[in-house]
Amino acid sequence: MRRPPAFVGAVVVFLFVGMAVGAPWVASTDPLRTDWNQIRKPPTIKHIFGTDDLGRDVYSRVVWGARISMQAGVFSILLAIAFGVPTGLVAGYYRGAIDQVIMRLTDAWLSFPFLILAIGLVTILGTSLTNATVAIGLAATPTYIRLTRGLVLSAAQEDYVQSARALGGGDARMMIRHILPNIFSALLVQATVSIPAAIIAEAILSFLGLGVQPPSPSWGTMLNTAQQFLETAPWMAWWPGLAIFSLALSFNLAGDGLRDFLDPKDY
Amino acid sequence: MFDFLVRRVAISIVTLFLITLIVFTGVRMIPGDPARVMAGTDADEAGLQEIREKYGLNDPVPVQYYRWLRLALKGDLGESIRTREPVVKTVAVKLPITIQLACFSIVIAIGIAIPAGVFSALRRNTAWDLLANAVSLCGVSIPTFWLGIMLILLLSVRLHLLPASGFVPFFQDPLGNLERMLMPAFVLGGALAAVLMRQTRNSMIEVMSANYIRTAYSKGLAEPAVVFRHALRNGLIPIVTILGLQMGALMGGAVVTEQIFVVPGFGRLIVEAVFTRDYPLVQGVVMITAGTYVLINLLVDVSYSLLNPRIRVKGSASES
Image 1 (cartoon, rainbow over the protein chains, first blue to last red):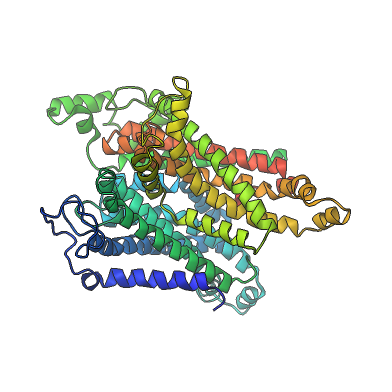
Image 2 (tube, rainbow over the protein chains, first blue to last red; image 1 turned 120 degrees about the horizontal axis):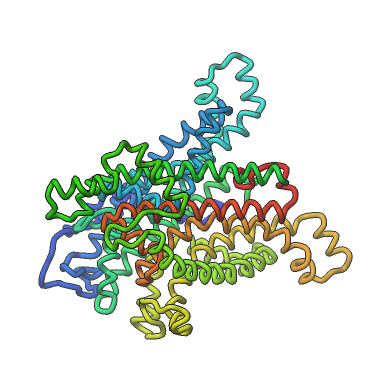
């Protein structure tokens, strides 16, 4: 274990995954249950993170929020990979006119700042968790097209690819059996960078009111509400933000470690 | 050099054209009847029909696109449904505020990132380097809007040092303006600083291992002379590109930052336009954002080629 921070990062990521999967057991209180006698109470033994403006338990909302964040973060990037990698493969493998068309469209798509594109797409799709996930995924797609294309261009020059082709490998076989496995690790590293970015993007969309709608316990919506009560109930703002921060930080730490492990020549 | 410029400008024009197509189609895919939004809820069918005629909403979409593009090329992006003001005029009022915020945050980011990056590259693998890296990693991972909220909580609510939100024009009250811009600019610049610092460090480490640096040392130059006169000049070239590519993130960040600190700029305008379903405004604002991004990156690529002659022959710098 040469990189303790990466190890810690990976452990924390898995803890969050565990929290998301086991939310009903990790938090026994219903995250939606309001209690009018417990409005904006500071942390106590019963409510260790305090309560919010509707008397709901902040701890259990943060725990359930992990589900929403993980769902948005992971599925959006899976979507981006599902669209981006095959497109980039085709562009990089066939080159020529099809490459030009794909890359010019990708350039245009990339000209929209990530967040502004996601906001625009949510406007078209409507506000919900699924739509926010799709919007973030589509906004992240061009990065994967570009990355895959670049990787394919260099992989296609390698001797093993050339010799596989000389042995009569068809296009599909070349792409799936020979090129894809060799660019997989670089794509994996990119995913560990994009997932925390997607998690933050979901929180921002929900914070702006364009993502998950109340009363669902999304970290972004929680922070939106918390902003109105900064003077009287600051704890409402601490925990959801701390959750996003620690999850994103752990992903980045684990991702750094993974990159060093898979590609030792890079620093 | 000339070929490179022509090629780069041509690509930008194609990109801009595709952007207009994407934006125009995108806005037409927003659910809901624009005529109904313009007329309000109590309009009758005849009123709606009148509006559709007036704005040419009954024409086939390609015809609408052609008309819009022709006007857009003349600098006319239509008018806002809500305020009836021309979109260009609305943007012209809001944009300077965001530009001030962006410039302020770039200054903060560069002021933090370059010295920190250079220093940690020179003192590689020391406690300082580790600390600088840890801070930069936190900077990349911290959600800007939460950082903003926490700063308001600390500096405004607790310590009463800075106003929590609001905006006054610089020429009306310079001190009040800077006082209110400091927190948003720090929040926006902090994320940028984190990215820039990492790049500066990596780039300086690479440059410092070059042969000409060893030569500079061996002819007896002191470290400051080597770093400032020889290394920094080459080491900072990649930073220009990164800064250009980060402009998109900066624009996105401005949306959130302006929302938290109630800065009435371009970013807030985008969110307002989306919420009020002000289609022409959404269309215009998104178009301007993407267009600006393309132009900034064109300028970055050109300046990059001026700074680094090796790139001129190879083609676009952003493709590498």
